[in-house]
Image (cartoon, rainbow over the protein chains, first blue to last red):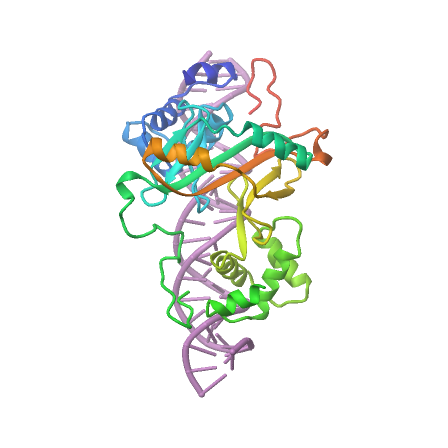
Length: 156
Length: 156
DNA sequence: CTACTTGCAAACACTTTGCAGTTGC
DNA sequence: GCAACTGCAAAGTGTTTGCAAGTAG
């Protein structure tokens, strides 16, 4: 399915590109750049990091995959096949669930009128705890909210 | 206003922290780390990059400022005073308008039921063209969508 | 065959850390 | 005065670029 889209864009179908796409489509989870590289190599492909970067960029452009931003800004990738593309991300285990029915249309229109913007796209991510992590302690934090602040002192 | 919050957390009010906060609160736009540094220095403060990083992290923690993630993942900062914090971002000039009335409550609840997640937070950003940029050509792209793809060739 | 693609090495950009000197309270 | 804070330099991390060699079509 990606193959046609590549060809249609005038791009060549190389083993490396196929491997990157396969890695992402074959994963339940979102993958980071290093993980894509590792997966592709585990599948027996000879491929370099540079190519992974370039290929991911291309595949996003062709809308075969999609970026997921975690809260700390790190970029990961998932297959775009699963629909219109919003994400629900577990703040503990980082599991990603994709959903599509955001029903934001009316709201977006009202913002457009108020702000005089022409709105082209939107991006919605929900954060929470998945069933398995709901009762786990700990926040898998971006850094320091873990630390308690002793009375009158900084803890930072 | 930030001063009390700093003190309340047990943190010291230094010139540098005041300068970072002033830079962000004094700006209509969101600022990147370098820009915060430049602004603070322009205002006559002696301050280093390291301190800017540390201070931004602290101010986010104290909820005096907020991160904005642009699509390319770069992190910028705005004052948190402007409300609940969703952003409408001009895809050409990067102007940011903040809005708060996202009315996502019912939708979020339905996702929570369906997915068995406990949803703690959400993050919505809208992208479009502001009034001034609406008729401008060009996309201010993340890289390469600017390039036209000549028939049958890659352009990439 | 030829232009597109790859992958290494090196450059680059961004962020964090160690630590001696400085400063708010 | 003392712990908190700063800022430099250096290390660490993630991403991009130049370019010679490889390969899809």
